Image (cartoon, rainbow, N blue to C red; front, side):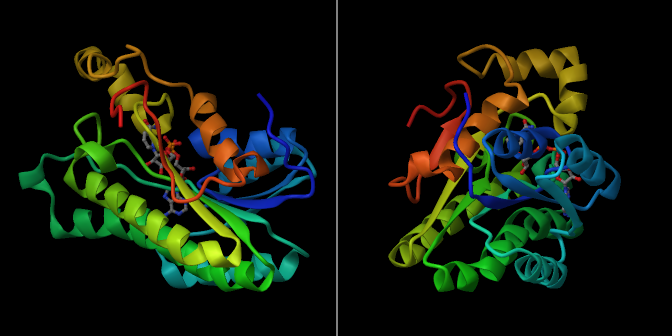
Length: 250
Ligand SMILES: NC(=O)c1ccc[n+]([C@@H]2O[C@H](COP(=O)([O-])OP(=O)(O)OC[C@H]3O[C@@H](n4cnc5c(N)ncnc54)[C@H](O)[C@@H]3O)[C@@H](O)[C@H]2O)c1
């Protein structure tokens, strides 16, 4: 399925691989321009090259708010008009609660939640000045059910925070034409979940929780994110959409 991105220029963090890469592909296939931001220069550059002239790459560290603000500032200087932001960069944390150190907790929250905050905050005044913009955050089913598939407490807390942040921006930004939505995927075959996919016992345990009885392919998650990021969702704002094979059912 294609969504129309003609005339749109969208920043996608974490777009070097996995779900973010599929999002970047969908934007280009829909006729838009995509700005791939990732900490991994190798995959980021390779994805931009693969997608052709309507894709570019900027290195960003979503664990460093100052860097996020500098890179997004640079992008806004380099492009005539940026119309959307998709926050997809994220890291997993899968230790049992009693084994989570302060460092692991802080890093997970810093990259997944504070990084999303900093990127939204860096572009928000620009969107106000330009009469609006669409923000889409990639959250997780973990943020709704307290983890338990792969991610545990720090991950679940970071994604629950992303859900709250999404609703708050939707509420405050609506009057400026800024929409903010989030998508909550469950188990998806990407490099992030390779260990889980490769472990038959854990794989079977997680699949037994998913009513559809299988993991998603990245493109199936990207489709919902692309819908939220497109004008097809022009009246959708503050929605936390489940793309989880039927786990949450709310
Ligand atoms: N795969 C799943 O099962 C699943 C389920 C629910 C939610 N998610 C969420 O989807 C998003 C994408 O996950 P994925 O499965 O494609 O993971 P992935 O590990 O395959 O890709 C994540 C991308 O983010 C980038 N990244 C990591 N840390 C970064 C940082 N500090 N700064 C900039 N970029 C950074 C990585 O380089 C990579 O390109 C994440 O937010 C993840 O939490 C994934």
